[in-house]
Structures are given as structure tokens and as C-alpha cells.
Image 1 (cartoon, rainbow, N blue to C red):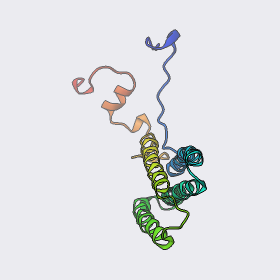
Image 2: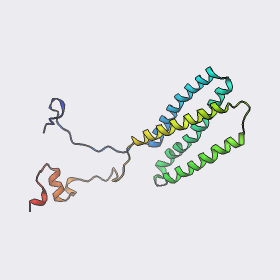
Image 3: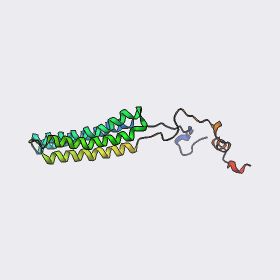
Length: 179
């Protein structure tokens, strides 16, 4: 059968199902670090031009904290998704708790260093959080997840009910009216 909508009358091939994305957490982590890395370079250059070395250090410190704590959950998700896929959501909740408490603990433990430029630190942290979250949502929305049916469970047309099997073979009649 020729596909009239295809160029040059290409023959339509049977559709095959694609599987889930391989390691979605690792893919998300790489792309989030890449996007945040570009933002950090831009902010460091701006801080270098507009302020002193303390502004540059503040940008690096704020961005490093965000990337480290946000990357933690994706890295843990990647490591546990293959070993214990049923526990990944619980692990994400635990790492979220670690992110919030750990981030606060680092800030409280350090206090306010004398070199910290608060506006550049806060600006870098906010920019990194917003970019990380936006990238994470965009990349996650493009991931493919296998929702039902394992790849090793193949169903042959012979296993379908007769009504469905006949429609799969190209029979355009409604199988319920054939009786």
C-alpha cells in the first residue's frame, strides 16, 4: 500500500513502538548542569566586569551550592532507578529533604563570610535555581516512560480476540456486524 501523503509514494512501514528513555535522571542532570554552567560563566564575567573578586567568588559560591544540592537528587535518582525503581519516588522525597536542610545547614554553619557579596550571591543562586528548574521540567516532559507492558512480553496477533485480529489484518468491516 502506498502512502499518498508521503513524498515520492513511499511505502508505509509498520509502526514499531519505541522503548523508554534510557536513564532519564542522568540525562536531566547532564542538561541541567550544562545550562547552569553557561549561566555561571556569564554571571562570572559580569561580576568580574562590574564588581571586585568578591563578587566573582560570591557568584561561584552561590551557583556551586545550587548545582551541588540540586544535582544530588538527580544523581541519587539515577543510581537508584535501576536497582530499586519502585523506591525512586521515596528517594526523591528524601533527597529533597536533604537539599533543603543541607542547604540551610551550610549557610548557617558558614555564617556570612567577609568576602561574600550578598546581591551577587543571591542573584547567582536564584538564576541557577530558576534555570535548573526550567531545564528539568522541559527535559522531563520530553522523556519517554514505559507505562505498561514489559518489553519481553510480546503479544502476537494470534493472541488477540478474533474481532481485533481481523481489524489488524486490514479488514475494514466492523467485526461485530459479521455475525
